[in-house]
Length: 475
Ligand code: ARG
Image (cartoon, rainbow, N blue to C red):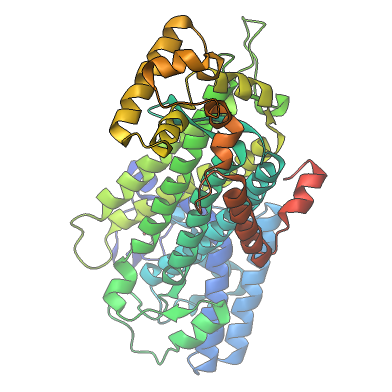
């Protein structure tokens, strides 16, 4: 049955038990405990500095909060569902432990600003963890790219073989995506780390608080500018969940490729045993479950983004209880993103690439057709005509079931009369890649440049990609 609530002064009847369960957020906000306590300590210190509490009262509060931390660490903390949320659980326990001083902690503060402070601090902690995992993942991709500068595979458009590319180039495309994800995190962090303490319920407070001092003690860069905005703004969560959704989207793309590549019809990769599972009925199977689940978990994170942006739509100022629903999407996103990035890094580190299968695939699909067309242009044929003539050569070779380079010069000349013996050098796939010299292209020099630039960036992040390669085991 309900015990007396901290807000129970004006209430004569206890809360209906079902309503109590319905309104409780304890299952969703326990994870804020550590940050809530940090925020409360800073608030108590500030109240003492400002002369609102005595030094002894603040010391008793801080000591009580430390005891609560210890209780939480040992599992002895008495969580009580009927106390609604993490904040009231901690405050009620504080009062039990230190008595009257504990009753003064909430001076000049409301749960409305308190809960946002804790949520912001946890959010900042989470995105820093994502960032660290992403840098690790980029380092792995960079190391694998270095290993496979000379490995060629078909590059696709429309999932049809298009032009040969180096495996390094393909992997580095993902490294670029994840690097943008890191930049996005760096961009949102200053908007996450804003202290709302001092906004109180919505309008500020009559006590001589020092919000700057609190922010400084907490190592938070900024202080709120408008108390009404401070208690109702959840943009920082939306931006965070969006970043998470983008990261998941990038990961689900590489996972889709791994799933395709692991299919025997591609055979471009072998999955590490530690990252795949078998079938309970088909003994031959080795399934890419980890990559599939990562693709699948992307859905939850998109769902979180939609939940949160829908939650915010049409909410009048300022705090509304709807806002309590903000923590679920954050937690769901964090768990999915943080685990997935770390697991993907491990999987990419151990993935076995199969250059021979890639080379065999290069021989099918006429990936050097563009080279033939470009060659004919070099001999003075207008591009449109060269394209047409090459198409006819391809159709002929396809009918014969052979690659372009397996045709005789006479056969090629039947459709492309200006072709000469030197055409065969052009048709070599290595040459096709080597000729892609434009910056950012798949040519060896352009790729080397890309790797150098990425390694310099990784070094600026305190990570050495080459070292990881030697270790063989990267995460
Ligand atoms: N658990 C609540 C939440 O997360 C704390 C704020 C409650 N404020 C209030 N005015 N009822 O939203």
